[in-house]
Image 1: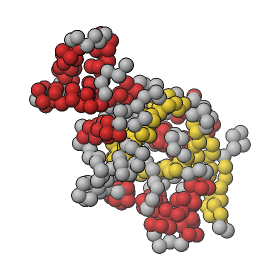
Image 2 (image 1 turned 120 degrees about the vertical axis):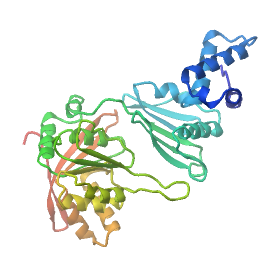
Image 3 (image 1 turned 90 degrees about the vertical axis):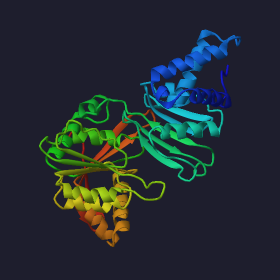
Image 4 (image 1 turned 60 degrees about the vertical axis):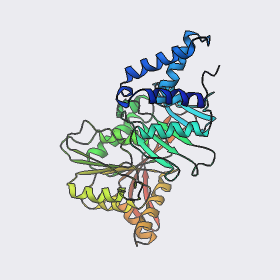
Length: 375
């Protein structure tokens, strides 16, 4: 039974908003009671059960303060990702497994309104003229949304939950991401200030691995982290500086790029620079930083294999500079010591597929030495 369609829901909300001031509605307990009272009033003669009345209260409250019909899934600790492809196509990831939900928004307008209100509560702007937006929630979760005309099939929403569990190498060993010997190898590499690059596909566990590796950095070292959206959790580090990029505002001004932040970081006297992810011309500045007095720095990137990732880094480097292809590849080889490649299998399990030592570049090829268990 559909208790309220989208138009009825909006009329319900408008009545509450017009009858009460913003300060009153800002108190969640007061707002909940106001909604309860209004639902009771509307239910007289409607033959709604107590459960249906409770469901209606939750529906209105979630629409006004949260993610509407998605809110119960956002609050479920077993769900790590929520993906809305269009109003009538919603997926979740639970325990590493993707499943489509028997759930839908009433219309494109309904979903667009939920997205706009949700971003608006965080003072983030998303609309037809600026249809793509990112947001980080207070709990660390990441939200990405796309509105028409950039999304012709209807608004798109993706929420990657932050579980609250701090990634530690011991946990990754326990869940089978890598072996204890591989973990020991990586710990030694971090302590010895080897520059490490982590590659893999989407949701393969790159950021989790980066967090786990960073935990091995000695406490006396000064770390500068640079990210598009802050995801790294290094709260145990005392001498830590966090920098975060920013997109241009409505007037196309105020953008802060990863390149800007990497260049700025060099003036902050870092022992190590950690770049959350490189995928463009900022690669040139990151590679230069690794070569000029900041060994032990780390970063991640999207790649199908270690060799594919090295070629992509070389392409980014060549695009951002006047260096020829061969010189770009030599520069990448001289900057990086170790590459860790992650893969997520069909069951949702994330595993370290390869650990590769980069021994240089010669005769048109990277000189790679794969780590072999037991050798």
